[in-house]
Image 1 (cartoon, rainbow, N blue to C red):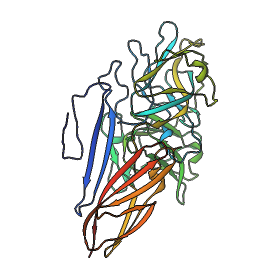
Image 2 (spheres, one colour; image 1 turned 90 degrees about the vertical axis):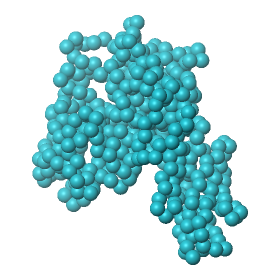
Image 3 (cartoon, one colour; image 1 turned 30 degrees about the vertical axis):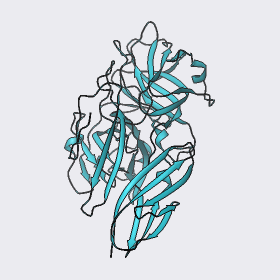
Image 4 (spheres, helix red, strand yellow; image 1 turned 180 degrees about the vertical axis):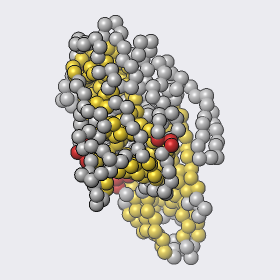
Length: 434
């Protein structure tokens, strides 16, 4: 199937479940420069078991699918910080509160860990927390620290203004499909009015397109400047995140929060909860078994954080079964937090980042490819960077200088080769002045 669309957005259907598709996107500028990238994704919309949460795009694996009573429903991706190239260690720890209801199956809790994208996943450990709480209370968890946070219904901000001075409050009032969309350098400033320092939790429903690999910075006005309070990283599907801002509420009246993104982001709902913290009962559900689709029981590999990995490549899965902890109070509601450690690597796609700077004067250009955008794989070394000019010149290195014989329009191809044999390329068209 080949479809061409000329627009800022496109919908392509029907797509076959579990099938990978390639999309080529090109942005062309008036000065003839263009940016072109390839996106590879796998269709899951019509897969058996459904697709939980909505939103998101191709990238960011593996995926968790809880048994909801009738099927294993796709919930969200885990260990998303594997896409952060400058993280402190190879493995990342991720805490995720399940959005899809987890229902007992044959006397135990059952979930599937799926790999249907283009990554090779290495899972070191997996655990399930059963969190019992008052039915009127919701439970959130900090995705990196594992701090459990209780909240009730959040109140919207008194105002929401973006960096262009526009009133953007209306689309942020409810999780109803209306959204605010921003790009690199954009931000939204939220005014929540007078807030007690004792309890202030920011509730955000956001989608950060995983192809972009970006984050949202949460900043609080401290009276003299903007102070970074926390950072949100993407998941594939819309999810409700809760950030405790109690330690960042300024002494003076008025809480001002700024949401600032490094790239494209979508906000569905934003609010603030000031209810007092509620009591929780937390029990870890024991791992009964973990059966890989190859037939191997990998539960021993997933029981401890010891760098012994259960691996998943596209098309594979692990069926997880957990014991059901005793329910102490039948009037309490139970939520679940999945705790995972590991990492994944993009198995089949090499990438050259867009942070490419080209400066020209007369017929000489200087070009630099930022190393951090070329090193797309966290632990794979670049062996060479080659610049191929269309006048036949071939240069090597992160930064090059080249003089053309005459002014005109030229193209160049950057090729990045990695030690494992993968090759990434990017073509750029440039105009050299006379």
